Amino acid sequence: MASPRTITIVALSFALGLFFVFMGTIKLTPRLSKDAYSEMKRAYKSYAKALPGLKKIGVSSVLLRKIIGSLEVGCGVVLTLVPGKPKDVANFLLLLVMLAVLFFHQLVGDPLKRYAHALVFGILLTCRLLIARQSEDRPEREDSREEQYLNDQERNKVKQS
Image 1 (cartoon, helix red, strand yellow):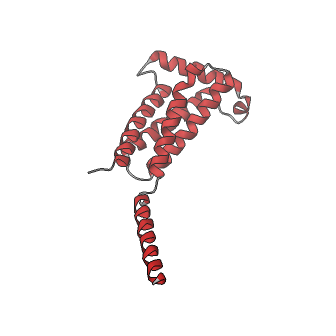
Image 2 (cartoon, rainbow, N blue to C red):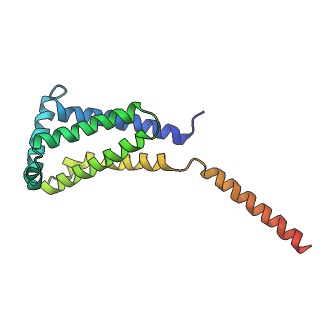
Image 3 (tube, rainbow, N blue to C red):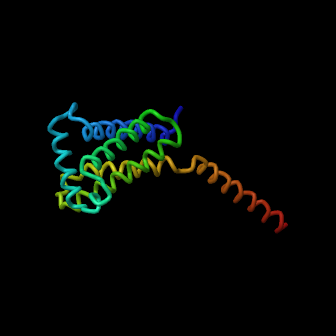
């Protein structure tokens, strides 16, 4: 039977992956929701205006939106379907994207309700990464510490007699 840790990682990976595939797709195409796509276009225009340095390096609001949307779709697919260490890399990249999105929202002065989702999903990504990076052999270490303690106790008894 799978450990609770494994079940948690699989559930978080699947749910987060689907969410980011959905959100990235909304940034890339109006097929899912024309209203949400229009809102994304408007939001990224305000982010690009607030960061004039982006224009200097040739990054327009459209390119910024497409880069972030593509990263979200790609990393979401990896979180959902690909086994192993690539999930941790995708998780880390999405965490960086969420930090950038939080920065953009703060930069333009959006209210909390406009970026609460980025906060929540950033926390979920952090939790998933921390759980995934926990060492599997931690319980074995505790057992070996107990055995070491018992062995030390026996040695002390032998030395005292």
